[in-house]
Amino acid sequence: MIVAIDAGNSRIKWGVHDGSAWVDGGALATADVGRLAEVADQWPAHARGVVCNVAGPTVAESISRLFAGRHADLVFLHASAAACGVRSRYESAQQLGADRWAALIGARAVLDSACLVVCAGTATTVDRLDVGGIFAGGLILPGFDLMCTALARNTAQLPLADGVFRALPRNTMDAIVSGCLQAQLGAVERMFQEIADEPAARCLLTGGAAPRLAAHLKIPFRLMDNLILDGLRRFAASPGR
Image 1 (cartoon, helix red, strand yellow):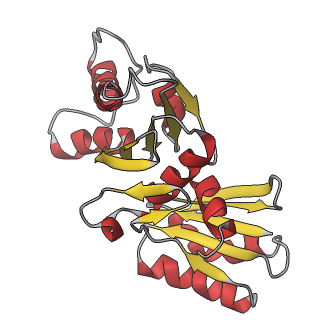
Image 2 (spheres, rainbow, N blue to C red; image 1 turned 180 degrees about the horizontal axis):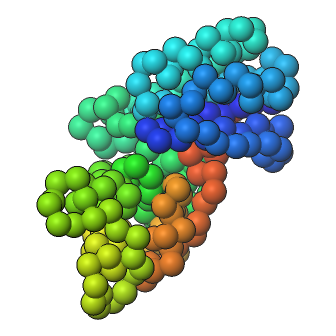
């Protein structure tokens, strides 16, 4: 059994894999990391743990203590030059976020064609994985909610919007929502144009804001519920990790 944990800026997502399928899973706010101990009581005894953490050292320490108390093995995934069929061209491979690296590993297990790996959360990351498994590079931009919040906090007359997406917005609420969403979609679709002519090219889309983007994307895509967790599981099961 493997317990995979994706500790992000806003949420901690976890899943239990029995070697064939995900058999359990859930999520909680990162600020509530202490509650993970309550969840862990339901995990199989001595299940191995694998974590990607971008939420800082305090969260990492909490998770480490949790597994130490269960006398279970735990490994933290860190980006590297190569792993599980993916090779990195990042200028400093170790500086890539562990969540992005896990998503790329998960994507390589799903597709052997060129793809765009999009994680839409607090931040939106848009990473290109070439047909040979080479991570060529990618983008980081504020996520949809962060964009909307930034406008509300840093302008005197713009509210925290609860509008809807429209091609030609005619009120302020819709204009904010549509503008922030168009910025997300534009970044993804512009990046996809670099691989659009390659056979079976796809965008793999994951993260809390993924369904919002999926409703309006005009490129071939596939929604992935557990892409980062899939990458973590694959890494944990790989020989010689």
